[in-house]
Image 1 (tube, one colour):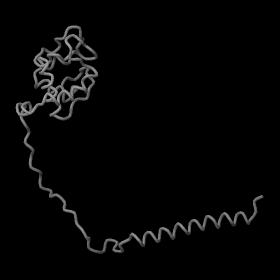
Image 2: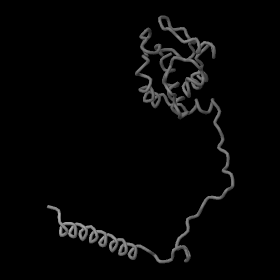
Image 3: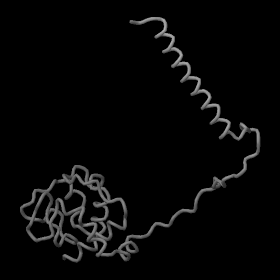
Image 4: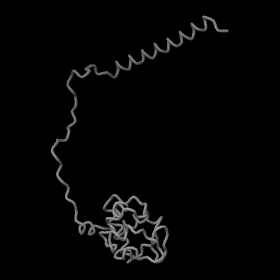
Length: 168
């Protein structure tokens, strides 16, 4: 069943395939190799930025940020909040309703069980407090029951606050 002729055929097939592989590698190297191997001059150099420090970016004040707010864009950001909050008065969901939230006392919604962490941070949901809370709720009020990670872009935060102000 298994004789030397079978073994010879298998070994010849394997060695022939290996030889074809080596020849293919040699041909591809000769086609794509420039031949300098780091000894010649580079044909094209890419300019690299200098190590000089970049000019500092001026941070906008809160007033300048809120002056650029767009309630229409804030309505699109609201879609992220809609899963847990409602805008109708008294319609609490996972989170309290947000109708009239700008300027409202923190923890003032009847029928909603707030975590104590919010009332320890501030008394009123001023635009500045909302801005800081929306940036990172867990950082602004450690221990809050709001599990949302926050809004990274300051434009999204001010636009959302502008949208929520339309419901005051």
